[in-house]
Amino acid sequence: VDKQSGVARNCDRLERGLAIMEQVQHKVEGLKEDLKVTMVQVEEKKAATAVLIDQVSKASANAADEKAIANEEEQKTTTLADNAAALQAEADTELKEAMPAMEAAAEAVNCLDKNSIGELKGFGKPPVECIDVCAACGFLLRNEKKKIDWKAAQRMMAKPDAFIEEVKFFDAKVIPENTLKEVDLLLA
Image 1 (cartoon, one colour):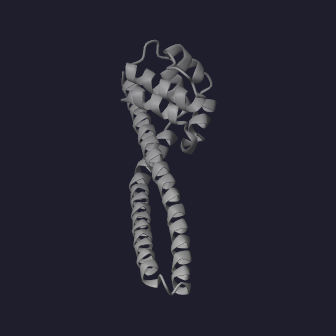
Image 2: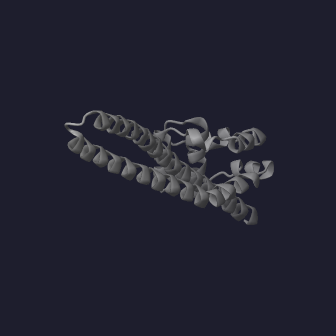
Image 3: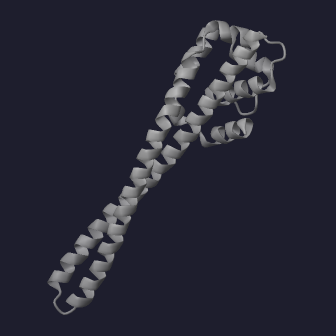
């Protein structure tokens, strides 16, 4: 019973750690993509503003009108640059906040050992939460298309050392969007 509760606690820690890592990674990647798009727009607007200002200096007849337009564009560019800087700051803050969770998740993975995995896969009928965590591992590690059952989970852990290595070297930066959705549904 103590071993089961220990394994259940380890499963729970692993589940929470993986869920936190995935959520944070997804948010950070989204913010990075938004920042890339915004920075491209800022550069394009800066270039357009520079061209516009040059044209204003050459055209004396329409100088007042052109300068007003250039000032408008410059203001828009400044607003975009400010927004991009704010987005970058937000991404940095979220990453800084996520680092302890990511480190905790890595620590949780490091506490896995061959005996614990062997004990877990030896259960005839484990708690539903353990099956769900194993199914989430199937989605993440093996790109399973549907939720695996307990027998498939036991096969996945057939070689505990290899399974632990697979978990340790899992790259959370390249999880397909549909896999994230399946795991979110499973662990919700």
